[in-house]
Image (cartoon, helix red, strand yellow):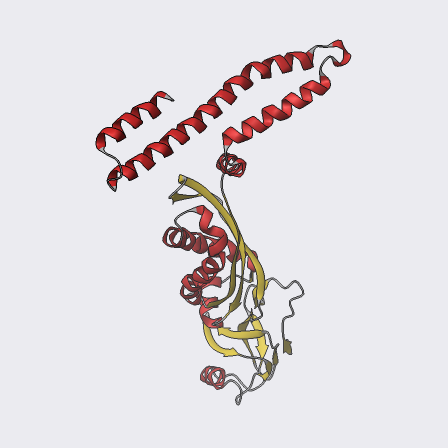
Length: 317
């Protein structure tokens, strides 16, 4: 091969070995073309001899002295071929890689007790140290794409997420106001792990943290009850509304359904009204007793007067 190069039309290739099985016959003077978004690691006999950045590199003495020493040691002439391999490393940004929890995360919630959470999101990476990444992650593979490393990185992300959620959150109800902080903390926690693989973590996002369906239904029910407010007043309103509907439909089509509904509601309503009156009376008596106690405390009335008046008020209950 007079020209050694690699173009990635898919946008998902992290590493491409040329040729995939090694044993490329390189002539002294061949050209190695490396794009702006690439590094090229030159191997001979399984050993990385040099890393080339963007540009056109002619395989000769002035460009690759370490290879020249190897060639001269074995007595090859200047035009003789030698066996080698080139590993092209994509240095561009690989965006929108996916992560998610295959199994739910057990989380201790201050309000809901123990709940199981699921989460997913995205992240973007770049190869920071080509030689480290090739030797530590890729190994002898001829082709290495983003799908191959997503599963491994996903495991690192989930393990960090479990720790971060436990430290930062007391309840799942705190998630909406803390989501930006969670993203920043997760990124800072993951940077060193990624750098140890020769990668840089460009960004990290949590798209969702969700509860099991049954827990979500309980939360919806509780939220609905809070929205209703005073249940007693709500029930009275509904009964009054039903009485109006029953009056409109009374005797319609001769079914008697409206009449039956009106009779049923009529039996319930007096009890509810009486309970409401009693509640108001109880509150009124209680207020009067409190005022009497205040008068007693300041010496405006005697203890005997307080006791007599208190008995009268209690008889009203």
